[in-house]
Length: 255
Image (cartoon, rainbow, N blue to C red; front, side, top):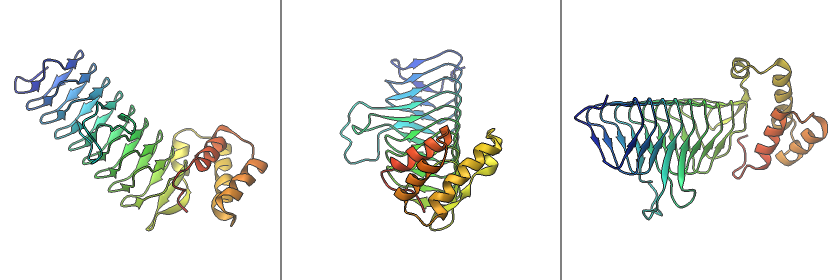
């Protein structure tokens, strides 16, 4: 299962049933779990931690040092969970002293040319489109869909179950359950189709919709809108998540 044309450092730890194609480079201080497929010309560099059942396509580079001038060679990692598909030429840099690790969860699809910068945190069940670029210390919650050629500013936070239109660029946070698009990027309604596909009930969807009507259509500022939601709405898990996301936003939410 391991090509004689691959290079694997003798200190690397490789699990069972791992397929390694020709011209793969696996560095020292790398841990790779079971049942992974690493296709030709992929590079798994120092500090990479890869779970089980991942498919890593040609030209991917995992664990390269951060593109951050503050990096001073500290011991950091790039950590990938289970059952991810990492397509051609994806780059996932390892962390810096800021957080120490870059994390990609499980069951994600990262399409061709995606860049995940240092100290990023991507949840599970996400789809990231071709050539999307994510700057340092961003956070993407579970089950988000980020379309192709999206530019995401450092420190931004994207909520769960969002759909972001291709070609967007943004420097503010995108709250959960919504569609974001246009130029400049803006709130375009809730992600009804995505929520139904994920099993949300009509009651849950209507509740989410009512919360965003208050945030985006009431004419109130964000602080006033959140106060109204707390006063008038039942604090279901979905509404609690929306309120917590908005209240804890460091960059402010898109409008």
